[in-house]
Image (cartoon, rainbow, N blue to C red; front, side, top):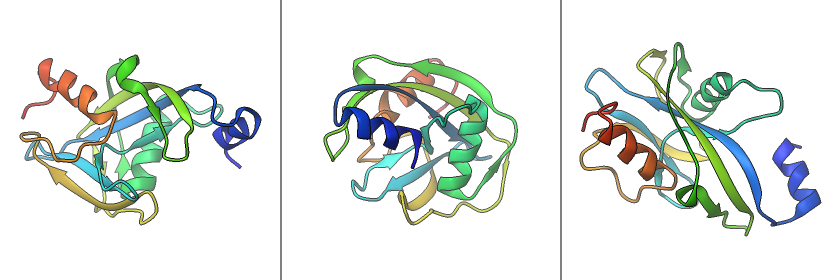
Length: 153
């Protein structure tokens, strides 16, 4: 059982502060790799929660590989996010206050493939317009990175 699963056994649906990562993979045409999530059908940036003892960069690489089958090399830290835009409820009622750390890379190898579990599809997509529906917390992160000129639409 995962660390978060063990916590949920203890606290039920009560709010937790959790740390997650986003792996923003950009191709040569300046498109961002997005994952279509199973269940909601919303588009998300590959990412997920940190495991116990895991480095943030390693979590970003692991999540990118698990969700897209791509192997990620070097990463650049581009932001850390928290606050009201990162407070959400899972479909099962679990409440989360998320601290999200975002990494950008153009250094990856392989062919993107959806994992078939969390995601039903992966695709490099232009940043303008952003795909719809866009799942939280992708929008505030992408808006910030575009606004700061780190990502170009």
